[in-house]
Length: 188
Image (cartoon, rainbow, N blue to C red):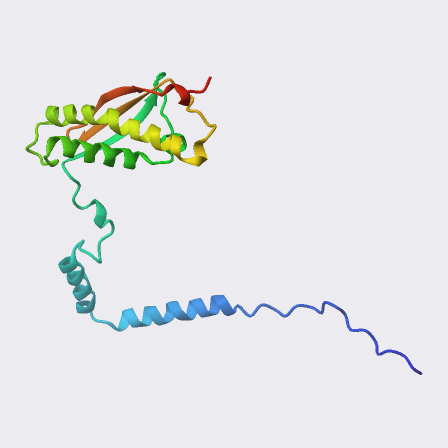
């Protein structure tokens, strides 16, 4: 007789679960429990004192970047003629951080002073208002020169830059000025 051997079933009964993962986890917890049980109280007191000595200092801190906030923070945002926020990066290819830096650099070149706390805020605001027009002119010129914006006019008539001064006492918004969008940039 020339036949094939009898076929084995494709899926034999699976083996019974041995509980390997749960047994391993139980064994680890059991070891930890025995380790803690064998230690005197002074070990845990030492760990607690060590934590008190290190406190919340680097590298044991949770958020070191928020440890020393400056007393005041400036930031800017741009709105259109209807008061709606303008996505500055989409319109110009730069972030509002870049706008803030350009206004600050221009203000410093005009004032020849730094942002020290002793500087009169009204004087800083006057220099920022004076710096706004050339800075925004740079953004419009640079936008025209960049190839990615050719044929994409700005859908706004005017842009208003608003400065926010945030202090520990609260937040104060001040419009720096309104800049008309150049004629060839405006969408019909």
